[in-house]
Structure formats: C-alpha cells, structure tokens
Length: 116
Image (cartoon, rainbow, N blue to C red; front, side, top):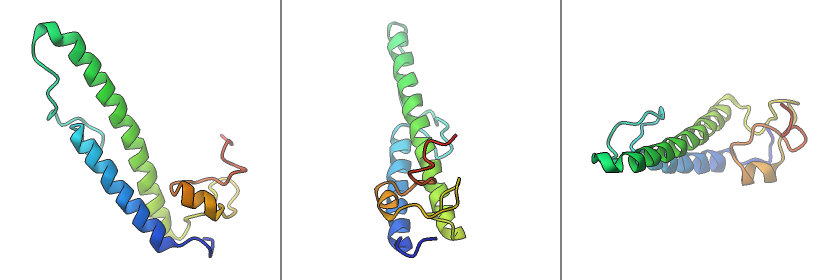
C-alpha cells in the first residue's frame, strides 16, 4: 500500500460507484449476479419479436459490461480491506497515485497494464 493514496476517499468513491452500477443493473432488470430478473417488458406481439430479441441482446450486453465493472469495484474494495490496494498485481510495485485516482479499480501499474 502506498502512503500517498487516501484509502478512505478511495473506498468512498468506489462505494458510490458501486451503488450507481447496482442501480443501473436493476433498471435494466438484472440483479447483482448479472442475471435478468424478467422485470423488463420486451413486447409480446409476434411482429415485434425481432425488435424484442434485438432489445434483449442489447440489454444483455449492457448488463454484462456493468457486471464486469461491478466485479472490478468489488475487487478494489476487497484490496482496500486486505491492505493491498494500490499495489500492482504483476510487479508488486506501488501503482501511481494519479492512476489510482483516475481509475480506482486499477490492479496494474502503467508499466504492467498491457502484460497478459
């Protein structure tokens, strides 16, 4: 953990972002696991079947993207609890404060961000 990262502020930012993502998922008719709960009406007319399928596919893509973001947020919050927030998963060096401020879910430093 780097001494320059304000963990309390990071946790607050991440918690606010998590609440927004959960709300967006709920608006799309999904729970936090990414499963659709069936609360969104895609239409029931046969003629609208193609449009309903296209709409459902778009919603599934959005939910999947939000679920990945939610997982990243939860991982960052867990790292704060574990005392490893701000440490690169690849090289174990501190991740720069500016990077963590810009992208609080970062798990890699700039040098390691493209390492597979």
